[in-house]
Every structure is written in structure tokens, then in C-alpha cells.
Length: 43
Image (cartoon, rainbow, N blue to C red; front, side, top):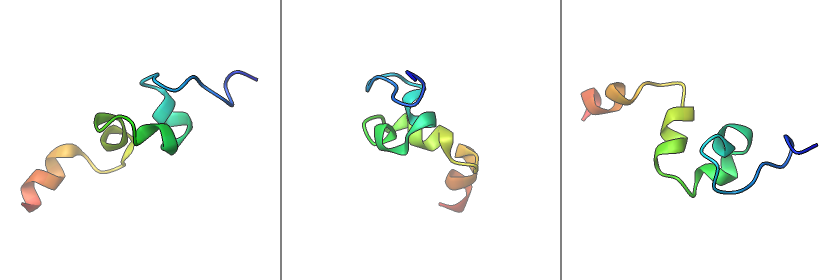
């Protein structure tokens, strides 16, 4: 049951719920399917 509602603040939280990802700027980027370097190349 705990898995469904992970504690806010955990790095892995973003993986379970995108809502928590907003708290961490690095979490959402890692969750995205596109690699970080890909965005830099476009710039």
C-alpha cells in the first residue's frame, strides 16, 4: 500500500507520481524519455 503513496521528498517519488517531480528540477528531466544532451544540441 505504501508504494501507491510514496513520501514527498524522495528522489524516486517522481517515478511514481509526476506531481512530486515538480518539487525537484532534476527528477522530471531524468523521467523524460529524451536524453539531457539532446536538448542542449537543439539550442
